[in-house]
Image (cartoon, rainbow, N blue to C red; front, side, top):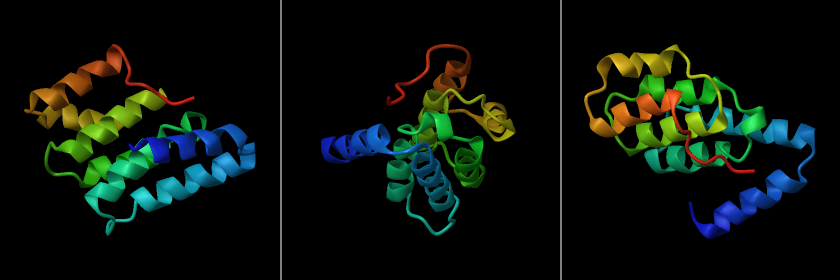
Length: 121
């Protein structure tokens, strides 16, 4: 994520009220569940979700992961963000455990019980 967008999200997360943070998280979930959204938008919005870990739910992550057919940068970004929020991975996350073949996916699946990627304050 660019320094500009990261800085903007840091500022919003720092000054937003609880209601505003909840609304932002709801909007992010709605956007990532839109099946017409581009891969680039999915990556950016998924990373943005890590700035609101207390409001995160697995729904948005599950929407993306259940639609992915390949192990790629979008899937890995979603897995990293999912783990960074501290949420317990869902059944959709576990489904990838059964079919993962790429070492980068397998490493992230193993991170479930180990170190988590960085979550933003």
